[in-house]
Length: 152
Image (cartoon, rainbow, N blue to C red; front, side, top):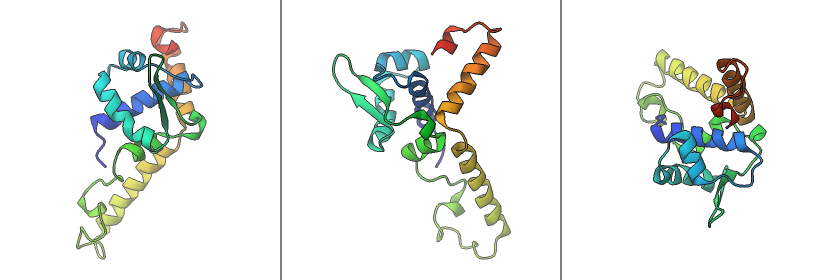
């Protein structure tokens, strides 16, 4: 997995939905305006999340998107797994047979350790915890007054 712009925007959009949870639906326009994502790109990046059951979509005039699960049950790792291939920092971690040095290379174990630690970090906090932390930081930045950004 290479963490692409699509992955970053997927995380941003899902965190926005987590901040609105348990809203039944959030309009595409609202998400796009709040997070600076084009409507076409938002639709594209949410498709894998819908297929994996992390996001729900509703069509029509009152349509939009919502989280399919409680944000206390989801992590950034869940989002990343839904939108990307498995995390591989280099070629030797993509497939066991890709690197001919696996049996004797001590660096291979280091690459695996870094990959495993990254997975642990992204899986270590729920979306609800991240949203709460973001709100606390926004209040701190605005001097105790809840800014427009904090209210989102």
